Every structure is written in structure tokens, then in C-alpha cells.
Length: 94
Image (tube, rainbow, N blue to C red; front, side, top):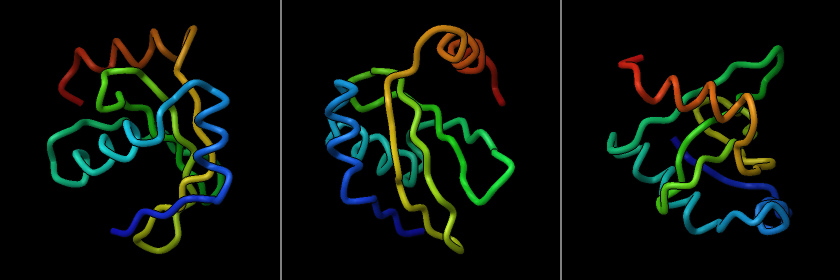
């Protein structure tokens, strides 16, 4: 699986106060089987990924599925009800 990102992905993360290096490290850990990521399906060719960055910050990433590859489009910190739901999921074995 290859992971690529939109040229404005790093900018959008920065505006949201999220470090792209933390996100990339977390994705690499996920690909290596060392990190859990909650894939949230949408009604299209996109998937939303809820995860913790390498520094432990909860984030959500929007990615387009392209065959077996992911193309990262946008991201932001998880908050509110989404954060509560994610933290409940973290305490399960799903």
C-alpha cells in the first residue's frame, strides 16, 4: 500500500495545529502493524481514519482510496462527540 498526499495536506494540518511528521509516523506504524487506526467508511471512494499521532494526539484524516493506495486529502484534530466515540473504540478490541 502506498500513501501519498494532496499538496495542501501539510498546510491544512498545520492550520489545524497538527504536525504532519506525527501523522506520517503514525501511518507508518499502522502499516507496520504497531498502531491501531479506526477506518470510518463514507458513501464514496473516501475513508476517514481516526487515530493517534506519534505524539498521542487524536486526529482524523480524510483519504481517497485509489486501488490499494491511500491519497491523504485533509486532516484535523478530533474533538467533541467524535473524540468521545474514538476513545470508547480505543478501549475495545475491535
